[in-house]
Length: 82
Image (cartoon, rainbow, N blue to C red; front, side, top):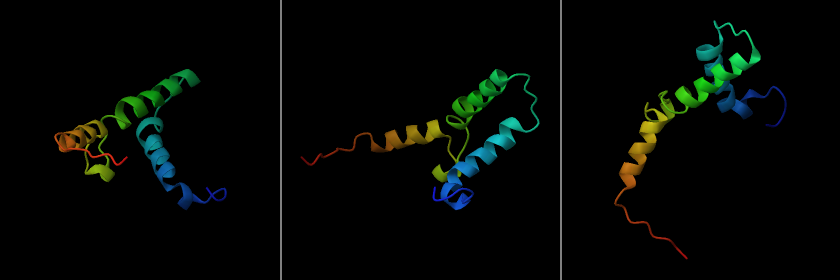
């Protein structure tokens, strides 16, 4: 980041936090910080990083995209240059 408040430098993070707030925080009432932390952790680790479809990878969930990637390279020979 070049300077405070320059959102162009941090567009990916800004987009993620906007999505997080809209989908997991707004409208919720957390009684404790631990409850909020647990809810946000569950959203990120169990939903966002594994299931949620992303436009950047053809609207596949991350797990599906990774499986498709490894299936596409299976059987391809890899040549290392030493």
